[in-house]
Image: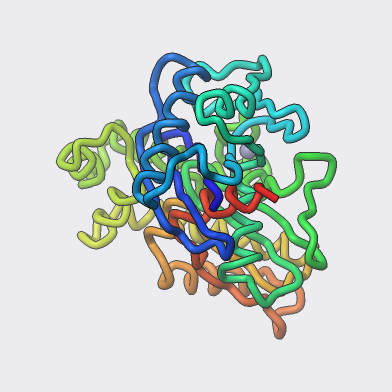
Length: 316
Ligand SMILES: [Zn+2]
């Protein structure tokens, strides 16, 4: 049995899987909002312990633990730096593998969070029968991962940043500081900023009401989905804008790579589900150069657990 941990900006997802990657136990807890990397290592160990308990094993009995982490991951050194969406994780490389190994008594392998989720969809999920894949993770940001001819393509370490494909020159401001990126329109973070700006200008919406009802401080995916179900005009407008940007950006990437399959995952992608995958497919159509042979567009099959299951694949 192997452990897998998906470290996100808001939550940690843990799984324990068997040799065929079947999930035997799982656990989820919030990512600590204080205490920096050591607190995160504690929380990862605790989540793993809970998942092991759920699977009925001692953590020490696991063959190994894989962690999918944001930021600059150095798998060989076992360190993570610049995980900016996690509180107080600075530029200094933190030895996450060694620290987590010390807390659990098991060896730890690190990987990039998006890439492990793409690897999981390729090995076990929606792209099992494909040779080439573009994974698009539509969440707080828009992440991506590429598999070409059966092999992950990471470039010089930074490939797959599909969220920063330019869909409009001199367009909306992106959280990365540049303008016109796909993420500036489709990232949940940017969508929330735009919603807040429009409300300040006097527009009405149920988004923030739903957010408060749900005891949230951010417009999580569930908040967007509820607002859409209530036909909220502003939410519909911003999601339509996101879909249009995704269509243009993904189609451009397909024009370059001509992959067989595109998998749509991420918090918003998973939550909005199949109908929105079809809408993205529709939005891509006018931009596809070889329009008579579009790639297959599929919803991520492993859903919320994909990142953690993919992380467990890091344990060779
Ligand atoms: Zn950007």
